Image (cartoon, rainbow, N blue to C red):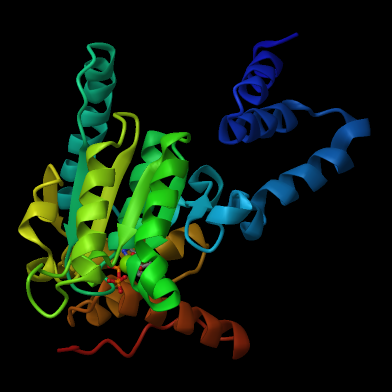
Length: 304
Ligand SMILES: Nc1ncnc2c1ncn2[C@@H]1O[C@H](COP(=O)(O)OP(=O)(O)OP(=O)(O)O)[C@@H](O)[C@H]1O
Ligand SMILES: [Mg+2]
């Protein structure tokens, strides 16, 4: 039995499906025998199909939480990491290691980061990047959806989600957390206030091996007591022209599209959010494929 097979068996025994998949990928990549080639290709494709990257959750938690295996779905070659985000990622990664030691000493520590900033600057994607770097599954709960869908049941659903992640170490993203984090004592005295208190109590019980990432574009709307549960707060901003250029060219290089540097530089004269920029790039790729012509990036304009 070689080390990879041993690793696979250990991961299955530990119920660690992510690790098991990683070992399977290594094993099939290493197998160059003729007789297994079709089998290996089929398994490789299966591991790559995006729907397979969503981890199956128990029935009672489906629809509340999403769980993604970012070791498969996150493409680091297409992700531009600015120096600002790199610094904060290092902070979180370092704290994760420290908190494991704290745990051995019996000290509970909430490893938590609040991301804020305008829409489309890459907050959710940065949460996935952290999970990818920490080699943990990415658990995702969107509070705006949760409130719209379940109204009165929101508090109970939050508890269920936290009960679930207690058994599964992960990066747990609480997206659009301002929807429930609204300042207590204003328009939402009753139900919302109870939900916020429930969330804070749940956060206080999170184990050291889970990282909590909150995201919002309205930091000012979040209750101060809830904000204090997050040990770090970081603003995700629009990229500078130079950074935008690097993000676009990184993406284009990864998909092997030829481009004119001048063309991209001109586009970057207009600061846009990362989401709009990537959208323009993909649209330009579509156009070049459909018209069978060279890739040209136009349409950059200032968005208020
Ligand atoms: N650093 C980055 N590198 C590459 N692409 C990025 C980056 N940041 C954002 N993008 C692109 O922008 C899209 C939107 O990012 P994301 O959904 O993370 O933004 P957001 O800040 O969470 O927005 P919202 O506040 O509306 O939820 C991504 O799907 C990706 O295409
Ligand atoms: Mg988002």
